[in-house]
Image (cartoon, rainbow, N blue to C red; front, side, top):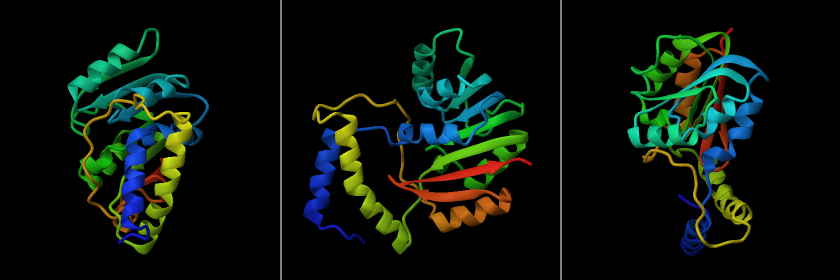
Length: 218
């Protein structure tokens, strides 16, 4: 289902390929706004090349990033200069979480690679009382509202790419992340399971094929 003609979609795809930008990094400022100005410790699950972890380190005493891709972790370590209080480890996103509690846990564009309910349960287990969990995720479109939001995002995606690239057509580097597979969980199912595991969780649909979830551990 789409409300845009096939030719327009194809033209948008070609334009977007010439003006790439990092959809996940676009939400980093929003993520930071959900967090306290200062906190003790943070865990970034699926940290990629560490962009968000380094931003968290500007507010945190310590930050630990985990990712299952050793090449990405190696890049994250190379990009992080001491004395930045960030450590990175190649680890399974769930079984590899250190047995600690964290004041902040973030997970950006990674939870759809994991068993959803088990991941939320693990995050809840490792989140300290008073802590904040912030997830930026991908969902499978399944409702008219999903398709409408996707249709609105397509031209906005092109405009944003053009602005971020300042009109240049040569591709610019974006943050290195693991290979992304399509999301297979619909947003209504995400809402239902999230609220069952994390009472009071606030999932919200967002532009650019993303959703957010914020939960405070009372």
